[in-house]
Length: 258
Ligand SMILES: [Zn+2]
Image (cartoon, rainbow, N blue to C red; front, side, top):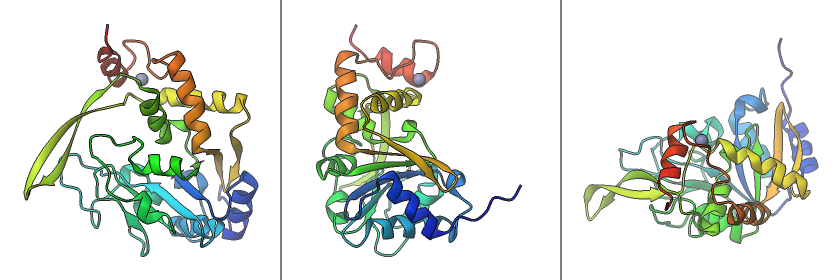
């Protein structure tokens, strides 16, 4: 079966119907294979998102390094693990990218603020690009991906004060030499982030629709953080699988105080 190519005009209308607001800050997580085929390919999708936001709007995408063992270079390090749209976005002219292995990229008036330096040991805290999107009352768009890909939920975990951590490392330049930085990150397999669908839907805080061929979700960063942090304060292990399901959740559980 050959799918019809979706025009940028039709896509723009679908984004507006979903609730994308001109002039806003929009953090987008995209799976292009679910959205396309689309006029202009991944660049066409980026241009459509930018034009829907207009000149006063700011588009943000994850741009994390594919390689923990190499020094991050914002001008050359790939982020293929974030998908083809994210790995196309940072290469476009006018797009800024933070200088961190946990980079985000952004275009628009707030891009400089969002991609300003952020500490490597706290990838998704308040002083990080997702934290700045939260402070700017931005929206989070999930295009063809579920909440398992939603980095803003890690911000909610940090603000809720969850105590689980997994050992991580990054490679940075420090005082002129290549240095391995070990740190403990709030992390697990993230599959149970999909519970957030039910939590947001129950309070009417998530818009759902189709964008191209993809199932799309849109919510305010502040609503995501508020709803998730409340759940985590009631049950710190809400996102952790029981022991024996996967190594990441086992590691997170084992890090909790007895
Ligand atoms: Zn798990």
